[in-house]
Length: 537
Image 1 (cartoon, helix red, strand yellow):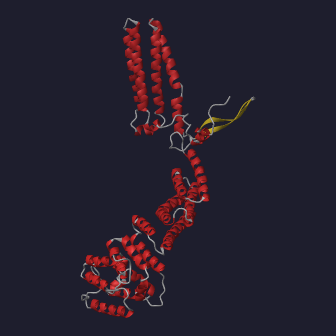
Image 2 (cartoon, helix red, strand yellow):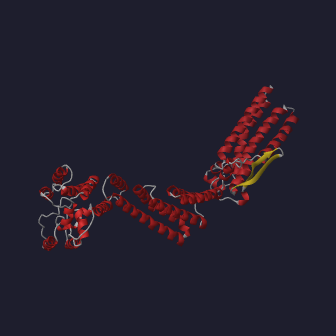
Image 3 (spheres, helix red, strand yellow):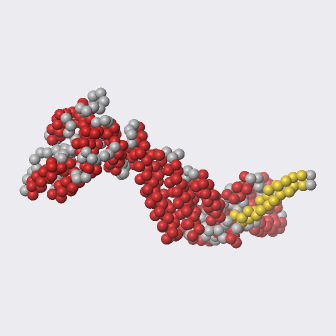
């Protein structure tokens, strides 16, 4: 810990409690050695802690720090204090760079039955060694026992002037604040461990310390809220960005406050609601002034709802979430979920709701339910739903079968059925040709065939039917003629269906059918309330 490694008492090579005269004299000697570029004699700087290279500036800074009683007390909390022969033995081990031996001497001392005048300094000194070796929990426990004891007065009297007044509670908070700053700021896991450990301890300053720690977090969140407010006011185009940055900068801090105070604490509820409402304000600003991604807005609002505690804040967030969620349904084409809807392409269906029934009849209300649709999806629906795709080829093939069958005097029935099937095949390939015109760029991107290749494939599809037809003409029995014709026709239709699937551009395959609107949110909401597409009678 830097507060130990760079402690002003250590810089001067003195133990905590050194008098003003000793500090002045030691400072003067050290400067002389430094100016002469000579090695300083062994003192209480304990190089086994970490290598120490002192300069005249360091000496002056340390000397100036140990002037005010408050600064001297903070420094003493994190440096070794000599109170008895046990401490002297341990100090000799530290000078000899045998930290393990020193730790054992103090450990034996603290294992006596409770803290007493003979071992109180061992609690303090062993705590420092534990802090240096990473045994933070045990170090805090020992130091709190020392600061909670009746023997603290001896420590205070040896460090500061008799006029200096500070309570055990204040000393405990001073110590814990310093440990918190050193150990937890850069490691959230350590912070969680630290807080949980402190909650488990019994000491007079616990409640005050936890509240003061929470106040630091609350102050940080208040600062971040103010920053977000200023950004929203000066640049509404970046309001959503400001809201997301506010979330990023405060998420961990809010969790820390929650762990310190609990969710039911009034102060936690107030700061959580302020934070949630500010994020909501950022979302509203962005939504009203710009055209943000609605999903991003909804994500941030849902997060603000998750942290809100108070009823007023929660209800306001829910109300705005419902409004923006409803708008989301109309922000994009329902069928592809990608393009901006075109008002002229909106698809509408009537919804009916029975209001009452009696002997005179059924009474109901109805509304037009608009479904947002883009131009591209409307073209797609027109291409796949147009009956002319099939009717015209079927009629032409029917007429063709009559012209072939009647003059030849052949069995007209199987010719008609076979030609009707081939008409369906041509109809399917015609639909593919229409789909290919919807998005030519997408067809090129997906290496789909051109219109010429579709026509070529249509002819190829007809080949099985033609072969079946020729075979049937050279067979004497009706069964063979029927069998050959239907096998050829079946293969033709099958190939046409496969072609219809393969040749449809990938971007069009995911488009919903025109009547697939039951799950469109506004319609689904009405259906859940009893509305139907069927007109009551």
